[in-house]
Amino acid sequence: MCILTRMSIGHTLLGLLESGPRHGYDLKRAFDERFGHDRPLHYGQVYSTMSRLLKHGLVEVEAIEPGEGPERKRYAITEAGVTDVARWLATPEKPEPYLQSTLYTKVVLALLTRRDAADILDVQRAEHLRLMRDLTERKRTGDLADQLICDHALFHLEADLRWLELTAARLDRLAREVSA
Amino acid sequence: MTAAEPLLTADGLCKSYGSTPALDGADFSIRPGEVVAVMGPSGSGKSTLLHCLAGIVVPDAGTITYRGDELSAMNDARRSALRRSDFGFVFQFGQLVPELTCAENVALPLRLGGTSRKEAARAALEWLRRLEVDDVAAQRPGAISGGQGQRVAVARALVTAPRVLFADEPTGALDSLNGERVMQLLTAAARDTDAAVVLVTHEARVAAYSDREVVVRDGRARDTARAA
Ligand SMILES: Nc1ncnc2c1ncn2[C@@H]1O[C@H](COP(=O)(O)OP(=O)(O)O)[C@@H](O)[C@H]1O
Ligand SMILES: [Mg+2]
Image (tube, rainbow over all chains, first blue to last red; front, top):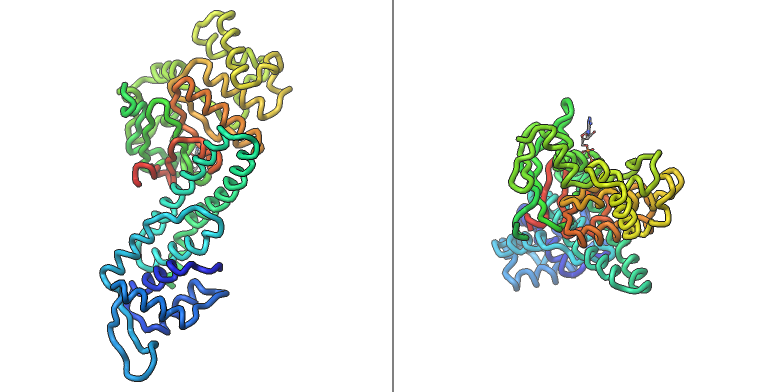
């Protein structure tokens, strides 16, 4: 699994909080289990992300257990946080290479929070096709160099779309595994 | 007819083969001159949708309206007449008559419609030229390449100036380069004649030649452009 961007780590942690309040260490464990296979989060990343989310009012500290250290804080998602997750899931990613980890994360989070994961794939497909149309049009009006450059991008976008279709066809299975 | 008015509309189409539902509440609409890609995995019902829209298959339920007339209310003869006069078809392969030359193949729909031999031959040659395959006019389909065959098929589908061109995986049997060329020529010719194109394909690069896409999954058509 590739590295998620800073922004999507925040959204992912938020999404994980939607199913119920969690402690910092518990959040990290849930993240690593589902999304961090070969790149677990550092505690530092978790706490810097959580303080950013706190500052923006997307989470709140629900309880602090006795003892030392930030891992004793129990975080809960706020209403603004839920809205933020929903907006993130509904917004297609800018088509670019190595998008799979972000899309995979979105699909799994949608399943975890009982949203429509097929919607995410549909919205993303439309976004990819929009760019593919632009490139196809550029190819029509361009010279051979334009055509070759556009073709390279088109083949990559097509590969993304094949992954989207395959994932769409396996959503039921993924939903069972995620909720197991 | 204004640009905003759909040319062909389908609402709630259902069609089963035995106990297999091929379409299960599919909606669709296309405007004059529009190229709409029908996408979806194999077996999702794309071809069945195309066959219903073209009046080849009668749906079990739902309505299809073409220029204000309900297709399902027409008798077979009227529907066949409509197919000949207003619709053109391109399939994956095997649509050319092997005994006829390419020029005769392209002229055939005009001849069946009563056009004189001379005029049909002239129009056929013009369309072969447009699709850049006039050099194979005198050849029979067995003697030409797959890419040339598909271009001849597109010429034959457009020679009658149809309002709707139905293309079911028109590049499915071609390599990338030939597929691209067929799509470029097909969409350019359709735009020149203002024909609407229902383009069934499972390939994204082919769908990228469309104005918008409709996705069929498990017999249900979903218009992502409209949903967005
Ligand atoms: N003539 C037919 N007889 C029986 N079953 C059919 C027939 N045509 C299609 N089907 C079935 O209907 C479903 C949809 O088929 P089709 O419309 O050809 O899908 P697609 O074009 O998307 O691959 C499939 O399950 C297919 O097996
Ligand atoms: Mg088919």
